[in-house]
Amino acid sequence: MSRLSSLIERAKGTKKRLIVAAADDDVVLSAVALAMKYEIISPVLVGPEKEIRRISEQTKIDLADCQIVDTEKEKAAAKAVEIASKDGGILMKGSVRTGDLMKIVLQEEYGLRTGSTITMVSVFDIPSYHKLLAISDAGMIIAPTFEQKIDMINATVRVMKELAVEKPKVAIIGAVEVPSAKMPATIDAAVLSKMNDRGQIKNCIIDGPFALDNAISLEAARHKNIESPIAGDADVLIMPDIEAGNVFYKAMVFLANAKVASVILGAKLPIVLTSRADSDETKLYSIALAAILA
Image (cartoon, rainbow, N blue to C red; front, side, top):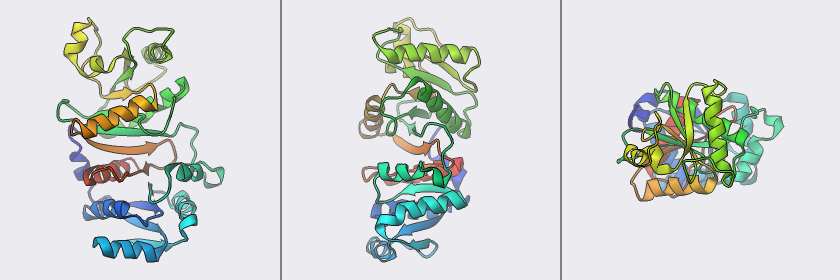
């Protein structure tokens, strides 16, 4: 799969169950309508029914094929998580804060914890890059530990395998290409690479540390005499912290005209978070990616 548009064909007709937490949100209802058009989802809208229907009438969104679970606004997130924990499918954030929703997801009573790190995987379709490029993490983990980076790698590898990349090339990103005790991210990168060499992290090829240019530009890597099967050809970038990931994400979308699909992994079901700044395409691609992973 070389373009994100292929996600739609892959997910079309799957009709995965999508449970929306606090669905009284025009942006979210718009995303749901788009995905319904391609029969990617079968929606369950949780929240105040009166408000959901008012928004749908204003925005001319047809809710005829949606199940609505009338719930008070303050209880909508917990009700949605409860439904998802019993029936499975995909969980989607509506008009509830991300942190508030994730706190409920992680409560033991719902049984959605897996022991893995909750991480955000974003897949970019960048006009100037020769294939899809995944990153982690641009929105969940502030300062990933070494162990969390292993989970981030495993999550992105799982996503890329679903996109038909059998052995993803994973670049561990830092500010420089040489391990330095003054930059812990570069030491993590060297150890992760060695663990991969020993078969302790499987189903991918890992190398690092890489500065960003050397991971995605073969010419830049050659100028610095970097020899690696990943140089200039990375499938996955593991970011050193949330600032680097977030800046990369927004630079790609707003400066490089990239298309993107994002999903939260690490719980027993995929979670979709959409922002008001996201394009309709991004919302649709994110739901389609979650449906493929569900």
